[in-house]
Length: 167
Length: 376
Image (tube, each protein chain N blue to C red):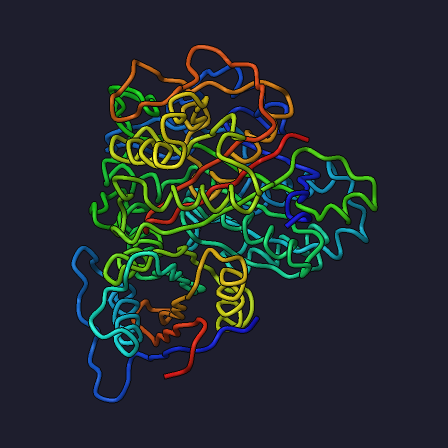
């Protein structure tokens, strides 16, 4: 079974500035970039949302480095004997921003975060495919994101996969 | 569906504060003595809480994972040719290493760590790395089960590792997630939070055909699995456990078993107020009034929360408990909490009279998993 691409979006596109801040997430551009590209992709299909309950839409977040800026800040602060801010606890795993997107749009399928060992898009598509095959998901929102080595936001792509026709 | 019911666990290995090896893990959870002690692995000056369940004299995470994979493969009786065809699914935290403290060679970070492990252990199949927080390992098992059931793979080694280290420790402390009284009390009145624990685990999963063809031992079976989201909050579980309930229902459906077949639940319960209540609500949603009659325990009260590795550590606990015929205790119990109306196993292990048990996990992001384990 190969899932159809129902919608796809990128950030940045021409004219985009930095993605808007996301309440509860600090210091790093990782979460704002995930939210911006996910919102853009889902709006193309669903307007303002949210989706009706029981949609079984998975969130599959694929990132080799994760939130490098936040992890680097925590590493440096702890190594220096300092105290990290409590908000860093809540954004210490990629699940948190995936859950933010899921809650905002009502996506009640599985949440899966992968660090790709091969081609990120292929690995994400393969994960979405197995979740759809298994039936735990009826659709999957695939988010591909990498930050630059210095932690600044790079690019992100979001792809909504499922049965249906491309829009 | 029939071949899925016979998915076999043919080899396991686990490191935790209870010791090295499956026997030490089983003995420790049946003894029910919490393994929390003052942290000596790194400096906890300035932290609110200064205890965790750590094993003295551990190597780097990369070295301990290598050892765990190798020992699980040996326990399963995998020779070089069998290893060469096996996939490796790794569950661990991403980001920079914070151990060994002060630097030193910690080995590669993820995702390169997976290839490093595979090469060292002679595993030649595909690799995947799960960074899905506290459902990383259980999701890896579910995915492996799907791919084996579909016929894509015959054999997957799932490995998972977390060794208590300064960065996550500082984050959990800052988030006031730790139990300030130094004890984990799942589902209990007076519970104050979680405590971290070491967990480096490997499990060999095989199709019934592949296992039978080489006369492999059977530790347990994975009869069903399910994954579902809460769509509720970035970090908090749904108060009524909606996602976890749907994960359990999916696991039962996939196994082709009625809810009444489940005779034990190894709970996710971390000892956190709202989280444990959410899990109890999920069990009530699935099992109705019978939820109060199914023996339940969270062994995190003994070995601590191993984060990305917790799902695999607790799968091994559940498999060994079923095989041994004793259900482990839920340590730290002070008394019942009306928000958790469950039959919690306190005081002493109970005889296991069941062939099927659930092991549940939940994570930030509203991610939930259920694995349905069958006795060998």
